Every structure is written in structure tokens, then in C-alpha cells.
Amino acid sequence: MTKAEIQFVRSLADKRYRDQEQCFIAEGDKLIGEILDSTLKIKHLYAIEGHFTGKAEIVTAKEMERISQLKTASTSLAVVERPRHHAPKTAPANALTLALDGVQNPGNLGTIIRLADWFGISDIYCSMDTADCYNPKVIQATMGAILRVRIHYLSLPEFLATTAASQIPIYGTMLDGKNIYNAELTPSGVIVMGNEGKGVSAECVRSFTHRLLIPSYPASHQGSESLNVAMATGIVCAEFRRRCQ
Image (cartoon, rainbow, N blue to C red; front, side, top):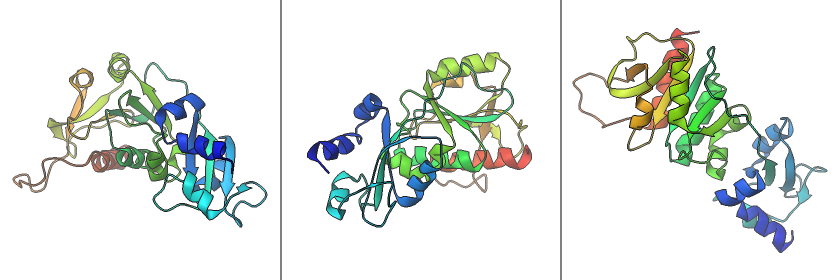
């Protein structure tokens, strides 16, 4: 690899350059194999000898260590063109979707994308201050789910207000909410999850049509103050799918 090539790949660790180049980094044979079978376009594919023979530019293990974003370098790395999704004005009326308000941790975001894929949720709407879904840590945490879930960045308060005005249910987890296991749930709507420390912003809460609570057990138990946002997302999605097949 040339110094310019190495510098270019390493620059994609920075969101500014990912936005500028409209590309992201994917690492590992399994993930790259899925990308090769998808509609996404790989601009550059690098691999050590014996991996993706005939498709990749062969590099040394030392070169792979220099371009890898992982603590332990993988055997292959791809520079992939970002998909282009049209940002909708409202959520669909006939599907269950997720909205994320200021989720900052890349690991949490990656896990939520993976959960969405598991529970058959095709779209996630993110506030502009939510972590970048093309951050290398997010990409790896999705375990390939990023290929099947559409991520939209938009003005979330405006989007939720327009969606609620279209009579589409907006669900949010709140401490003053109704026990999710007793609450009426619908097969479609938007589930809103908030920032790890602050929860959902007041601007987004105004559009809630249903407030839900994930109760601790037993009710009198004084345990953790709150659940991790990715864990809470999994519990909520599982309950919706359990009752609203």
C-alpha cells in the first residue's frame, strides 16, 4: 500500500472525512462477505494473503495493522460506499419503527441496530446528535445488521410531531408511564428511546401519544436507577412483537 492509501483509509475513522467521502470502513471476512452479497458498492478491498483471493488487494499483516480500526487487526478491510436513504416526513402507518433521541454511545447504537434487525424493524429515525451509524465501532457492533436496517438522520422533534399529527402512535419509555406489560400496544407506530443520561428531550416528549414504563421486579425493589438504553430497547421491542404479531 502507498502512504496515501494508508492515510486515506485511516482518515475514515473521522466522521468529517466519512461525510466528505460518503464512505465507511467494514472489517472482517464475515461482514465483508455479506456486503459483497448486498447491493452496497465496495470501493477498495484489502486482505492478507488467502482471503478474498482475486477480489482483494493483498496487503501484509503489518499494513493491515496500520489501517485497521480494531484493537486486534482483522484479515480483511473494505472501504464501502454509504447507502443513500430518502429521509421521510413521517413514519409509515403500517410498520413498527424506532426513533433515537441523542443516543451517544457507539456500542449502544450498534446493538440497537442489531436488535431492530432481529425484531424485523426496517427503519430507525435518529436525532442529529445521535452517534454516527458509520462509526467503525457501530459498524462492527451491528454484526451486519447495518446492511438491512435503514438509518435516517433528521430533525426528530419535527418528525415526531408530523407523525403524531398523522394519527400514528408514538410510544416512549417514561418513569411516569404505564406498565408495558399491561398497556395497550399496537402492531405499528414509533418507539422512541432517549439519551443514556438525560432520556428523551422535552421537545420529543410533547409528541408522545403513549407513555410506557418497564417496571423493576419486585415493584418495591430499590435497584439500579435505570436500564441501559440498548437493553431497554430490546425489552420494549420484544414485548411489542410478542403481543402484536
